[in-house]
Image 1 (cartoon, protein in one colour):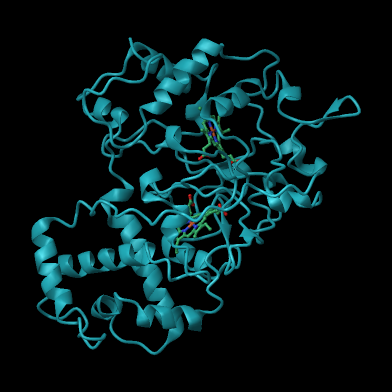
Image 2 (cartoon, rainbow, N blue to C red):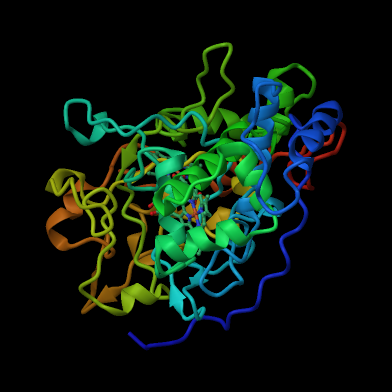
Length: 420
Ligand code: HEC
Ligand code: HEC
């Protein structure tokens, strides 16, 4: 395949100031600034002290996490923060349609997977194997579940040479000690000369920010309002929801779980794994090597599960905010949500539309080695010689997915095509 460069890298806009976490209520902020204020003179402050309430300590940790999340100095290039790839203005997902983001100390390296949204990850359970079968695997962070927790995950981008590329733990710890928020860091965790511990503390603050800040789980989509009886789906949205649930049509719900215990808002994932056979993405730099296959659970990034039966499986993502994503699937193969729906609907009835044809033979599931192509899921919406849904039905399904975007303003009509 031609070694065509990706679209040129455009320097990212400065991360926008994020709306303050709802938990940082005005009163709490006052006491927090009193708490951190005394450490302002160069990091000599005391650890969150006896007069500090647990709430204040938790707030300080979240606030520190937010500073770390937005600090572009914590990268080899000095230009990349967590927010560069997980932009708060794009539901903490990528702000551009590149299949993978550009990183590394000299911004010359390409990632291996599309950057996910970081919203609503709080309930992702730790990775578990069940009885070892593909259907029983659950949880873990990263699309192959290789990171056990948000804390463990946060270490990875800092040191990944394709991402923030800080070079070494010592270099990173030095930056943390010299940062403008170093006093806050010391207030929260105390002083330490141990670089490993310093990094662990940073990952704890980052995890606290992602877990506890309401920015990451606002639950204010139209669909949430509908569940609270404060809004109503329009007929097209309602039909889309039916298709999403119908086991003979979309059957989306069998993986993107919607059934909820009354106290838990739906996450649109069962946290399980499936092999969809997404077409190979020729725009992904790693794919210039024809022998490179990203097989999810069985590597090459994940190294401990090389059972052939799980090859090609990725964790089922949450579908909240999916209508705002510029890029879809682990390999960033598609750039429009309607194309994703068409792929689900016609992968098996019209494979020539999705996979290349070589010598008259359609190369189905071309992003997997031939030996594991049999792992691909063939339940509905797949596995049918004729599409299960009409074009109009896909339109309705799209209308429903658009109700899952955060920040719904009550009374706002849906776009044309989704109105009654
Ligand atoms: C260069 C872009 C880039 C940067 C910078 C970056 N990430 Fe990511 N992030 C990704 C990609 C790509 C993935 C998906 C990796 C995978 O599935 O293997 C990811 C995955 C994650 C996940 C797991 C999401 C899930 O659904 O399991 C979390 C959490 C996360 N990143 C947090 C962070 C934090 C915290 C930082 C800063 C310390 C950060 N990221 C910096 C690109 C980036
Ligand atoms: C067999 C389980 C399964 C079924 C059924 C299923 N999905 Fe998925 N879905 C997944 C998995 C696994 C992924 C991630 C695949 C990957 O990245 O390679 C995914 C990814 C997606 C994505 C891309 C999200 C992103 O962040 O890139 C969308 C959109 C989506 N599914 C919507 C749907 C809709 C709509 C339906 C019903 C028509 C559906 N899915 C049915 C398992 C399923």
